[in-house]
Length: 365
Image: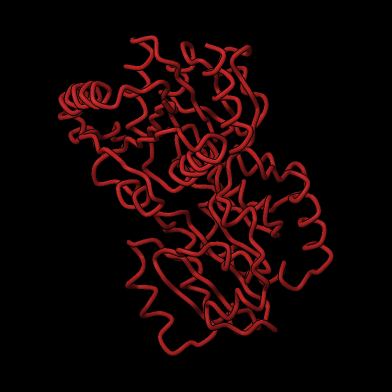
């Protein structure tokens, strides 16, 4: 009889894609394992997880709303309801272990597992741990971290520094620049700028590109622009009739986008950082300043300090992003230095290391 494992969490691509990578690595290590995902209703995981071929159960749960306290009044009820939902999921599925990857839905799942003595594992991708992970880390069987120096958040004896799992489609990609450009109907002879604001988009980056689009194209660059849903319609209007631009709210085949790109402008979520290390691209980070504990700035600073990336403050993005991108595109020496230094930080087998560590703990029981 195969082991039964629940993977809980989501909310953004930064939680979902590593979770799927871990699931795939577990199945590869032992095909008899049964995996069930638990996510939050209405969030991205409810769509992305089934696309990856896994079953998912959705909880009626929401996180604490930092911007509007009135929206938090229903929070206790949702939390209580989600605990009942998790209880019935456990009853039906009978998990041997649970893995939390961050996001609202991981909290009630790990909490219940810990109260029942079921092995619980946490993957913390950021260099600044999330509050619920810190609470859950005390009783977790093991905590896998994306970076070192996490002893201030978790019991040192439980930490295993694994790096962050990067989707196999990206980590093992053989797509050439020519194929990447062809996928987006662009010219392989031109320098390509890839703009990604995370799976939900980035207002400041989008506004900067929009405002200075003509300068960008005038400098001979072409553009792959992932806007996120809120900005998509406005961007479509701005790029009408401009052939050197591909625009959409979401990029489904990121390996083609990375292959086409010469330089990248991006947020500094942990997964984006991990992917950029693997694909070895010169990058200008514009960290999202309102991320919990400003962890994106911490993520980006780690690379900047190693001469592996450049960084622009969100508040200065509007008029700095495009000139810096144009300058970087023209400076081959700087690109080579950034590429060399970011490549040295790449970890390509984090998913395998995590899967093996989980199975070792479970088989030792």
